[in-house]
Image (cartoon, rainbow, N blue to C red; front, side, top):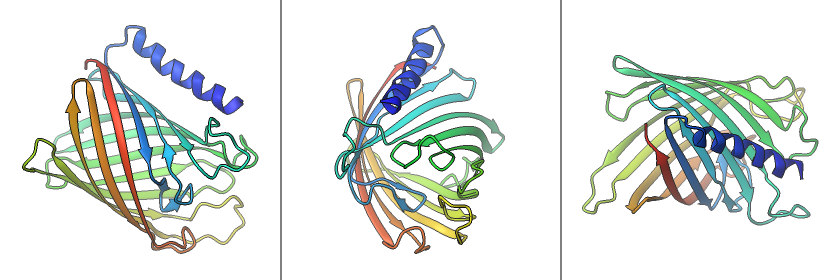
Length: 251
């Protein structure tokens, strides 16, 4: 199918860049998630997903390219489990400026499971501007995403976030993350719909990892509160995930 072919092509491009002598690091990751929540939306309605990704870090240039995919594992109706649900392509550039780190990026998001793909309601482009004060506790970060979808879309999305590592008695560190997202207007397939602005998601996350040989195993738990009922009538969403990743090359 077209969606599967497109995923293979994009994945091949990333792998080709890594194999072609590009100085940097290639990271391959596979994640099993009990749910998939995006900006407060319970995308799969509480169903599990397989979400692999490929990331190419281009040395010390600050450039990072990523291809991320999502397959819902249950409740697919007439759709096959091998049919790709979503693909996100990302290119970001980061640079330290004194006590802060600035990041700019471009995204291309595709939701293949929406009717009408590849129309303007199932694909969109976004631009990212982010500033993180890395020398302060919790590394407070503010990020602004703006999509360019002429039909629907959610307009500007602002994310405030921070994280902190905690030492444990074992070799596995514990990281806590806290974020709050503000949506200028909730996502809608019809731009004429009456859409509200407000905080769309407040999320607390905990994760830890262990290293076994060349593999990094990460497990995590998130609890999301959704203030806007129009985005999700289920105000609280809980999910867990297990990931395994491996890196190749060096920076």
